[in-house]
Image (cartoon, rainbow, N blue to C red; front, side):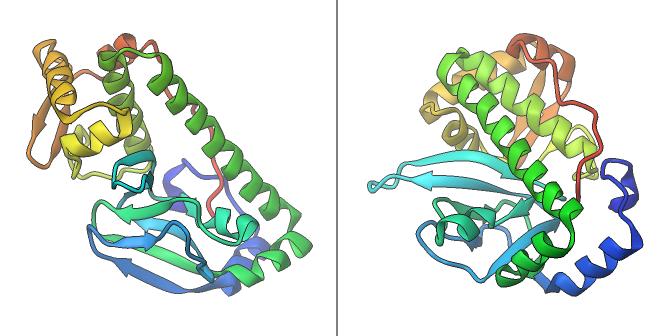
Length: 233
């Protein structure tokens, strides 16, 4: 995945350190929880394959999906700062994650400032995405929200070749979309039908087919993701 052109190159010294930093790999089945809100994990993770989502829940079980995690994403950092996770992470598909010991994170900051900056970059990028998501939930119409979300996921997935069928986003249900957009399932269904009627998408039981991503971006008033090489820890 480092050779995809989507990630920045690393020096041999940095690669050696990351090789020693790594403590193994975790295979997570679709539907399983990787990190749980309110718990402390001794590990950090980088997504190698598959995808999942971050979310928070209210006491009555209502869920808000905050963002999605794709190959190259670094997860669990929040627990290093706050001692416990303030959100959960579940697997949408089968996933493989690289496992790091949280306690060794300080050695990275002490000995490899370039890698430390990479972690800061990833945290800032996550904040930037959450800013856009909050704008979407707060100010975009239902159709604009749905168009933005599907265009956003499509472009992120395409950058890391997540899906074998390049125009598909799967697995992803209408309930996932509703929990991301802050809409009821009925309202979400009607909204997605409007996008389908315009020829921008088709939806299936297991996910969505993107037929016209440019139209989705136009509906959402969104310019798309920047084309920059990002870090990969």
